[in-house]
Length: 356
Image (cartoon, rainbow, N blue to C red):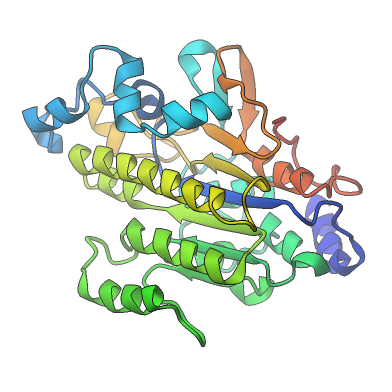
């Protein structure tokens, strides 16, 4: 029934009127980044483990005596700016829990849950390139006249055009090894197009995150989208490869990307003071036995455990949440709708939003 009502909602999209047309939302996802590294930094069992590309050099770069020091050297922007100005949920050692509701515990089901506000284990049960039958929050926003053609998505993984159902939704999705297209490409877009073909990715279906990041910012400069999804992917793929060194370095680089994005937002009149940034992940990873840090899925304990970050416009500066709570990633999509003041008439169609 909820699925039918969502379809009806999209059909009625042109009849909806956004109450907050100045609002901008950036949804960022970091594929498969464990909450353990986010909140406690480098893992003692992995950082010098040669089986996973650990080394003394890696330890010198990322190891510190306390979890607070380790996490700050790993993700300095998160634990300086965001910890002061936003909210960081999911430190399970303090009672703050964020979980998935799907039982697949891998990427497509995780992204479906984040973007649609519900799990769909019956139909979303593989990573196959099949168009999502469910309606994402991106598509809902794109049906509203004020935001038509103001919704974009960028992803390192080449399955995102199917997760977002680019064909049906009409949302431009630049993912995998796609290049910037269209007339009036900027010099940087032309350079990225050329460079992407010259720098090989370690993987056949995932490009390096630097291309995803810079393509997204160039689009923000040109088209000023009100809603954009940026999906970084390296952390998951380096983890699957068993390369803890690359996993940590990629996590740190993504933190730099988020800082770069925020600096762009704060320096752009269209975005400054009007932008909310939401960040989460599609699944967790294993912890014990040790080799399961590389993996996730329904047979991996801890793969359900994730995290959620928010900062920017409308977000109370609560910092790291240290009280007992239970959040779910199904709350991300309705939270985006509330930010655009579209909760009236749709609150019954999705999960409980996350209070910011």
